[in-house]
Image (cartoon, rainbow, N blue to C red; front, side, top):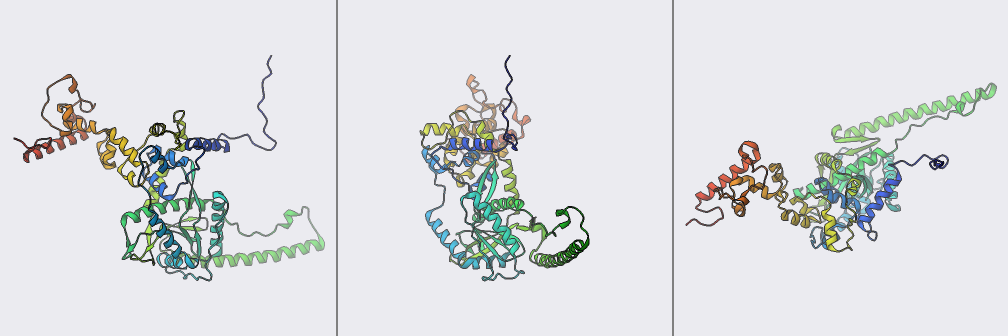
Length: 497
């Protein structure tokens, strides 16, 4: 009779491994490393990439590649679809020089801009009392912990503090992303303002709307990550007196009891004095905070930290190197980014659906890389051309398949169930449209042949009575034919005889 095996015992004092513990996380990291290629380090996510990912949450391809840290620029070049997406070296050098100028002398100019545009009624920053703590540490986890410690110390110091390039973390589809804003300024009252420094000019106090909007979306990602950091900050506990009676068991009598009683009375008096002083300090500080804050709705409390719904955009003034600032309200961008990132499919779910042998190692042949890319669904839109390195490849595939997404998200939303250009044309001209001439949308009836069957299920019925989208397309086709007829042209653009 076989002896039943007993499960191995866990070490003393340790709990059994949880299915959601470190082991699955290590397995996911190993899987993502295999997809990326063991010889290639992961490419970190930045706020620009996260803003683009949040703008297109339905693209599972980008979510997986960004979660795995794949270098999409090298991947696009390896499959023969190089992209010109990116920032020029001249712009990078100019931006770094301008940022160094803004943060010179302990960030005195930057603190003055923050004070002037976000808290004009507060006490002006004094360069002698302003703080610029060192945020250096080993590894990203160490830098995140050092940023949290510096933020807590800045709030307790009640002085203007500049956190230069703090490191924040944000969970994106189950994968951590490390973000590094340009600067974070902590006001004396604990209010925090994210600063976004850009090299494009601000002419007459106004920046380019498209570039300012992109900067606002990036800053919203930083504020979202900062919210998570603030929630993780441990709250300070009020001072408590020593509990001598609880620490020393048993009752005490005589001189020792009287001595302990006097000590407890003196200590309680000191505690009361400290509590009264703390109450007065908190009351004065709250009054100053109320004066600095224009409205309570513009700040979200997190422990002892107030997070601004406005970020400060700092740009060169009128094509010079002098810094100019403008507050930007990011409440709309913040809500959109939070909602879109929550809609992202988790990376492990996408990885589980991949076929065996899928890899994005740029050292593999282009045919294998293309097949691996096609195994992950994408959601192309014309806006991807300004935000994704693989946009040219996805656009070519969408055009080859005749997808209506190449015409834009607005057109795609209007067409409803029609997903290809062939279906749209067939629906517009109905069953009367001959196959070779569908591009002309000629409403003239064709000879009934076996090959003239409609390719769209909607066109097989009467679209004018079945679908409002089909009725609109038929109406548009009729108006187009009428306009061409009035101009003396045929459907194909040729002049009538």
